[in-house]
Image (cartoon, rainbow, N blue to C red; front, top):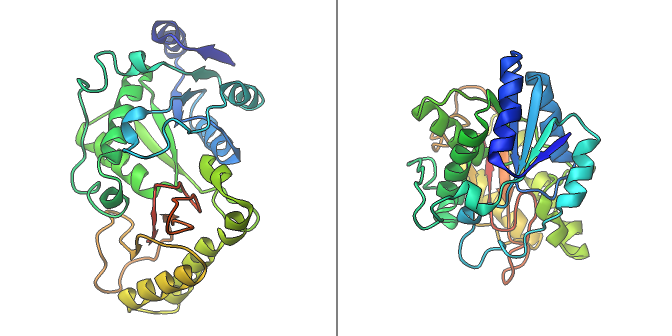
Length: 291
């Protein structure tokens, strides 16, 4: 595996691969890689001859008081881990490469609608930072395929909308969520959890499984299911920002039953009222959505 920090050196290698007729897949990450990330790399390999993993902790998607400064940066460990799998290149640009005119003067990509509710309501500007950095990584790498995890469901839906709206020549592939044995979705921020919080964290997944079971059994009182799940989480020590049953295609509220039930889970909750803590996604990517 080759490691690149300079965009021009990366592009020279990408040009050689394209000249050979090879397709290129990108797996954007913020590092601190775990088995969930590796699964994305493997999915990328199934869809392209060459795989580029990016590691960049993007400052524009962090809000005030969030964990940008403390976010785990484990580049050497990540490099060693990627060398054992099927990645062809690791691209780790600096901030000046991604934002050459500075963050305040950066051209931004904003996807209205999808970014304005659920997690977007609690993290204003977060998705604007995500779409902006993903668009920039796409411009730097010019991939044929991009792989994202289903765990961050709203995020991948927003990115799909951006790609479709801008007619970007990138095919988005969504890979299944990878979980611990007790159901907790793997996350780079799970390390923030105390021992007690980690023991309680699987209650999120169990709550969502309960919603799924009820829907498959014919339950149609969506609001009642949301209220009961919220109370169940609160009883388990969480302070969920939301529990929502939404359409998988566009996250719009479902007023009546109909169509095929799909379970896509994008959730986390604050484990303690006073301190945001990761439970099943990220410590500030809060809330819980059953789709």
